[in-house]
Image 1: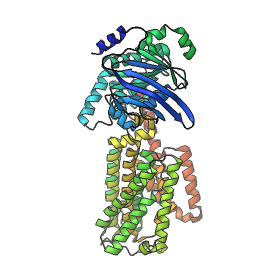
Image 2: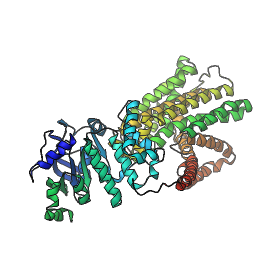
Image 3: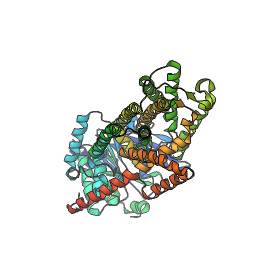
Image 4: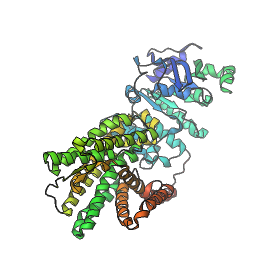
Length: 258
Length: 319
């Protein structure tokens, strides 16, 4: 099914936002967020369609992470609407948003260093009350990340950077989200390790999970995402298919210095 | 986890045997007070160690429990078996009400507001003479047929065992892990669906319940309750115990409670210097053992453990 969606979007005419039959799962419209008096987002609007991988790209401090935090409820929006699967989630508490099917994997791959790998992973299914179900999901996570299985009893703080990122992603997947939001998954990783992380993201997406990704590294982002939004000082400056963005060096240079 | 459990079980067996080895009434009194402080330090540790917020108002629950037991005993003549559990429940209700307000705050705000609640309750106890008898306190609380220090010892040992059992169950439950997750990183905890307020509330109410039990026991054991149960001096003692033993561990508060109880007693010899020495000890701990004695032990074990890990080929570059 996912393969169909991917080919459907690939077949869409250039320059047009692909609209597949599933329709948008996430619609953000006119989102404004402020930290005290400092406005961080001046009306961000974007759409993510079922089965897509969408990237938010932009310089440091452009408002990419703020957008993700507002979607997952960690920050309250001043104005604007956030609709997930047709339901408004703008005023829900973060735990209700997780329950609704959105998982947010925060930046800097925060894991709980004093807990074991297995404890970190099972906590990801915190909202799941059935022990058997949690066990099943832990089994799936270990199946997907065999390296974490080897390290199951180790303290998360002893893992390498790449392993910690994998752990953070595995933990986010434990709530079995339909939309996974990843904040700078390649930050501080070697190019080789970053490539492995993106390989994992592709495989997660191929299993039917929609992905919204924040990246500073444009080339990595465009290699994994089908579409990307360029964010600059709290505004969306452009939203294009990845191939089109790659073919528009002026735009990339203007906003991303690349 | 298993190490912690086994240490607790060994300590329990030791504590059960103690009164058969020690018959001296004075030493038994010290043991009773040490266990009383074990309950208090364990309950405060749930908030300070696991929620990670620094409560200076824990005496609110100790005092509420003590006054509840004292009033039930002096007015209704109820025995300890009833008053102490009721004291715990009343304190838990206070914990719920105070927690509902204070747990919305963090850091210094939480510290100040919890302190304010304890102080308000002290003023109430001091001035609501019709009920609390004001500064004169409530005297002549029945001892429910417990005359021997040894009998009191077994009662408080049962309460301490209960407190540690409840703490153990909490710490290794989902709610306990969630509380630690919030303590370590609030954002990440929220991102997996933890409600920080709910997790902290469970720990706070549980801690209030235990402190209330300890307060109820205290009322019967001393057979007098006055407004000083709300006083900051009590609070300072409990905090030193938790910090010295090691916050965020189950064994730490026990170690801290026993050491500080003995120190308080044996430093009586140098009455004037007692508080000064105490202050110096606290400073030394904060500077050199920020995670307390048990934190120090844990770190030594970890260092030992990591040397073993280093011998295995753990340093692989790919994931």
